[in-house]
Length: 102
Ligand code: FES
Image (tube, rainbow, N blue to C red; front, top):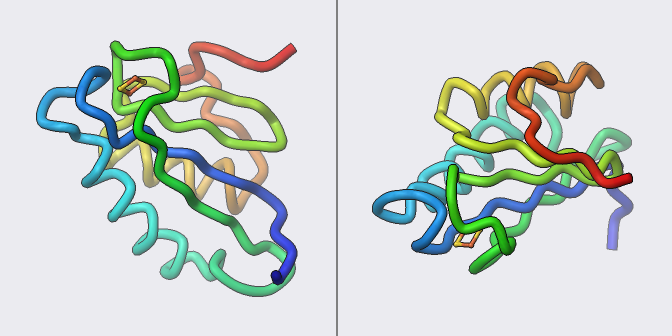
């Protein structure tokens, strides 16, 4: 497997967001990673969907590792900022973070 620098988990379950809104976020994430050149090479980002991340409110929920940063209420606009500012630029979108691994 080609190594990657970050792993993004998106909850696509039915409890944290209405109409399982994480599914659209997960699909959009693939488009944004491709657009920003983050699917291959030294800055490669792996994305995965999860049926539940244990939060079950305030979603869609998106988690970025290795930072262990958890984002809530991820709209398409916020997702774009996460991809461009955090995944590509290395600067977390701090105002949207609700949890961070210790
Ligand atoms: S259903 Fe999304 S966190 Fe549980």
